[in-house]
Image 1 (cartoon, rainbow, N blue to C red):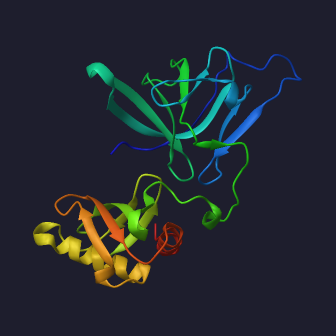
Image 2 (image 1 turned 135 degrees about the vertical axis):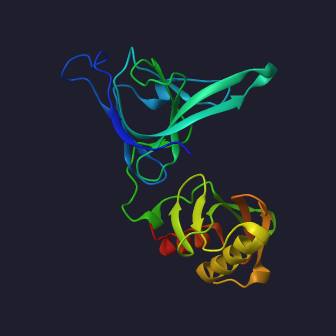
Length: 232
């Protein structure tokens, strides 16, 4: 997994036209962290046809970003094409919010803003007031699925982080012979206040990325219980 370090970047060549120029501040829609200052409105930027991302041209507009690096991702597009993305995440919740096509941010002329990731209004400081992250979703039948990334052979069972991509859980048991899966289900049952019969490990029996499906709770209830249990 790529190392994530917080940086603040700015375009020195693209400054507002005069002292009266408007500056627009954008925040993470999930946690409310300040992420972008620019001199143009998001709605006025061009949008990509492939993923509806907004295109911020650093040669034309101010772009001050407060982000953590999220690493390189390769995506398959139509007609066998492969797109390279260098992703940038929110410094608060690590939600994927921006990407670029060049590795070096200073030389990247275009910054792509993920559709729906930013807001002009800062969220409440209480994380319980933030929207439920994508890793926890309501599905058919009143069930909730939770994307989990497990680290086995840890000192204790704990939830170490809840971000946009997954819920990070450590377990003391080794992955061999399903011991880590059993400990994970027992631990999640305690955290969520559920019986083993109310939870199903739908995917990931043999790897660290797992998909847990739970009954009798809403996505919001699952999110709040997980937040309460986080021990970094």
